[in-house]
Length: 546
Image 1 (cartoon, rainbow, N blue to C red):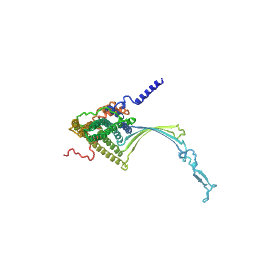
Image 2: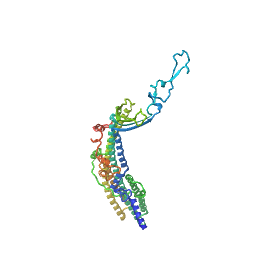
Image 3: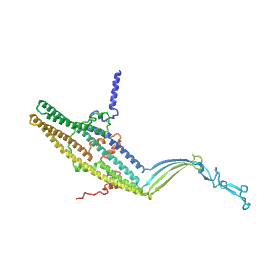
Image 4: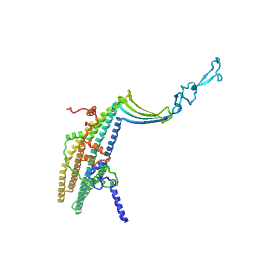
């Protein structure tokens, strides 16, 4: 019976180690080669950049709540208790428990002039007895307490609180746009790194085929040398060609391992014992050349309108406009209203339980007539920051245009290279076939065969590289124009998203995929939107120049 129990326990232990901690639907990336869809979904769930940006959404939401709190009434309850030294407490009338240090000296009216005053012919009366109704005496209690419950509300502070709330909401919107941009960037990185693995694997196959051919050439030349039909030089030449080709194979295998490790980091997969293997993250698939239609003018227009990166920069400009309002509020007064209830002990009674209650209300205001140019400096700083944000946005537009134009140029270059290398491969294979036939017929040389083999290896390498370049250009084109749809839809449909992203946040993130900071329902004012559309200071308009 014990062996059966041991086998059963071992089975449970194995199953626990294989599946512990895996939620339903989790990708078991080590049970089979990873497909591209699985890799992207895994990255969308646990890529560090996406996880960080999700927390940024929550941080910005907290900032909005803080800014919004200043617009709401503040309900406060305070309480104080104090005990005072009796020597510090004085009231009029009553008995005194202290003695006076001053006495009034009185002499008889019939005392001759010039007679010295002594205790025998005078009388002294303490002042606290003579002026008993005026001197201080302690009454009541030396303990006191006060409890207040009041509401305070800022009525006016130059619009600083309202502008600060708008600024916080704009920054929160920018965080959602940044999340969309991060998703596009992560998806592009995963796809490119995945295809890099496929490229390196294809290059390994090319190098292995070349090495195998050179090994067969070496074996053939050795057999011919032993038969006495070729000189030893042919053998040495074949050996040299083979040894020169092997380092390329070693490099290709090393690049293949590094590419897998790079993808594993992007996917958030921890390093462990499996990383000691020659294939730490096996992937499935192969490079596939699929031409797409593209137009530079249309691509530029789409990128300017939809690229989340530009929406982030536009939001920064709008937030800068609101910051100027916040800082300029220092020139205006602040008015606050307050009303509440108060309960305190009765100061005329020694019993702390005897109280007095009542209400109070009032207004308070302040106005910094001169603050040493602090507000002026804050406004100057805010306006300069606004101009910096405008300049950054303007440069970001040029950067996006460059990225789109570069992607289109790379697409054309890779497409032309693929056509050229396909023809080169056909010609190189035919040249290798003819050189082998000529060598066998005795009309050719071994050098012709080796050169033909080198040309074929070069052509195949160029073709595989051109395929990768085209696929990478497609990925970059979709990222730079924000036209990647498949994986963005999966993120929005909850197929692949971090567990830390709440349903409400995910819904807003899906909405912000198509929104613009200049939409009518956005928090920025019409004035701020108008200011954000003006060019930065010093910008030269070159549109009408010849």
